[in-house]
Image 1: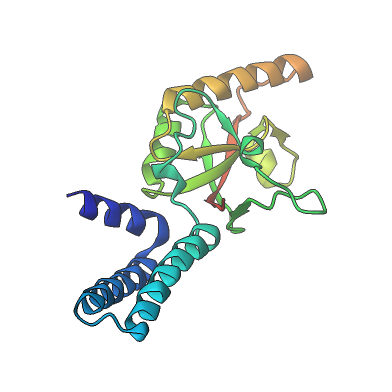
Image 2: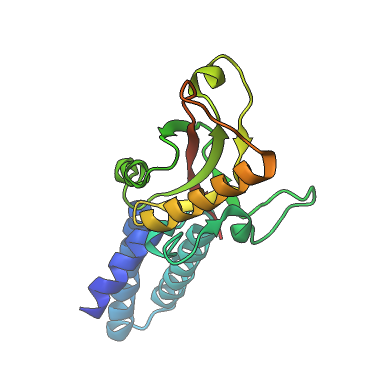
Length: 207
């Protein structure tokens, strides 16, 4: 049971290709170990050592190169809002985060001035086992925004998954909208269609 659990963890974190490679070299290791017991030749001992080194290399290489399925490991925006800046583990020489890579194509949706059901609908369409970077822009009139009027960024990008807490996100947005209205003295009338433009894209975290 312990062996199967370990193989499942390897599959989740490293991928099918790495799992198959490890299984093949594990078979080589056990076979060479068995043959060494029968005939302790120098060649079999070299193969046994080589198989161990290859398995270690595969584990190390994939842990560095392949993205971890972060939504299975880190509880993003469950008990508190998780900001993207909190995940910038390391930076390159130019000051850009080197530990994070996210897909460039952005998806858009529309919140009707931060209704809980809108947040829940967004979480429902997210893929399982994936993590997303989300930004929220406040607009005072959707029609004017579509004609090119500017929007107001409500805060730093946050990180969510399908399992994030919708009530927590709703509360966060309500507080940010209230602060924006008070700070900039925003006013609305019956003709306006205020709301929040939501931009989200998939995030891969490299450690």
